Length: 448
Image 1 (cartoon, rainbow, N blue to C red):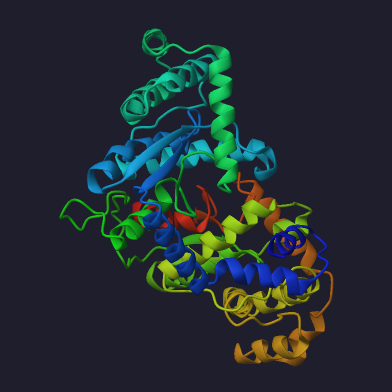
Image 2 (cartoon, helix red, strand yellow; image 1 turned 90 degrees about the horizontal axis):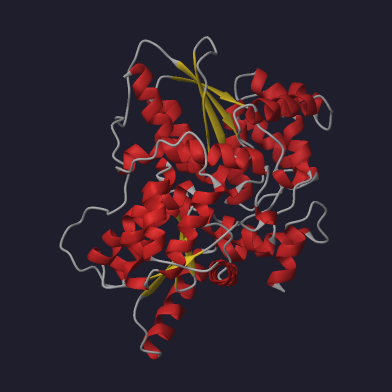
């Protein structure tokens, strides 16, 4: 039943909104989440298994270059076994806009690397020959030596040090067929665990992607009582300089690209509101259509991960999900139709913020006229004026223009953000609620 719900949810025209909503509510539910963890730990104890963490490493993935630097820190801080698994290409159906994806990932990893004390300054992805060398080396490395060797391989790969990799390849030889077999085996395990990229950790029914999610794994291991050192410091947290609040006579523009069906957008809303209140920004809200309404499809395993991960992130930031009612289709179109008039009245962000809360916490169908009227009234706007745009078509050009603007920054997913100087110049674009701390760092750099 749940698999069917997700298949229906991940296509543009769903058979049943009830099935779609049931699937989303199942994988975002905190009680189910806790029960899955409890059941997994009970089974692990019954089978007398150690705390084993799988780590998926992809040599030419810039995020794997960051995560490999934290393997030894995890092992030295917790009584766990880390099993490294070499993986190859991502599942193509899970990668949208692949050309933009590659460009963005490298740029993003380079931006955040200094905050994690990792060096990554490559201007482009490594040559295939060096990638083949790297896979050949790591395919024959013993499990216990993987982290140490993989760090050396990764540093040489991303700096183009062919001589070092060639020498190491003679020490750790693998045939081409052995490498292919190793990568296929790794991809098979990764796929079986419900994931699709590298740089991810898997522990007892739960996935943790990259340095951005390691804190969730840390917290879980601490709760299980397997921390072996006495420090309270996180082993993986960016070194930040931006203050909690910032006062400045100057302002910057902060463009915010939300979608009404995005659980990650919901998870970001509270922090966007905080940046608006605590930093000198001119917030410009630029909603875009959900990916599913842009004729994109999301495979069920990715949809499951997105919803469960976004719910986990939302809880972390004190903005938990409640009852979900997906607005895909007519509800979203009706709500978007009012946005231009509401935004012109100066309440664009507040409107989107309330719609997200209705969809992801209150379980409200935001396409109901009575709800929209109540929302507009609560925003101190005149319903008799705003409702003139209900079900009109002029909102489509507004959202199309917003989408083009978002794509111009190599971003295709939501929420995305763009910082510019107040005159609109010097753009700095980031994708995802994961990077809201980086927005503050950039604003502080410009105005602090």
